[in-house]
Length: 77
Image 1: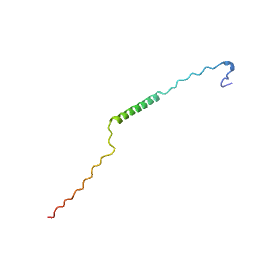
Image 2: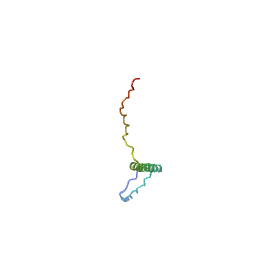
Image 3: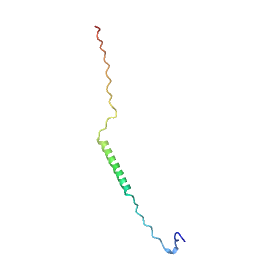
Image 4: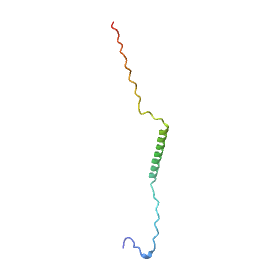
């Protein structure tokens, strides 16, 4: 008969299967390392910039309006 061999009661216990090591492609590992490194460096830079660089004020000062002046009228000649 073709197929899987039937197990007999007299065969005894089967050895436990050994766990296999998970294999990742090298390109995926390098990409994960690069993306993680960029994220860590960006967060360190953001924290440094937040706490050390003074921020510009959000409200821009408005130039004062010219004060109303009197118009000098020249006397007629």
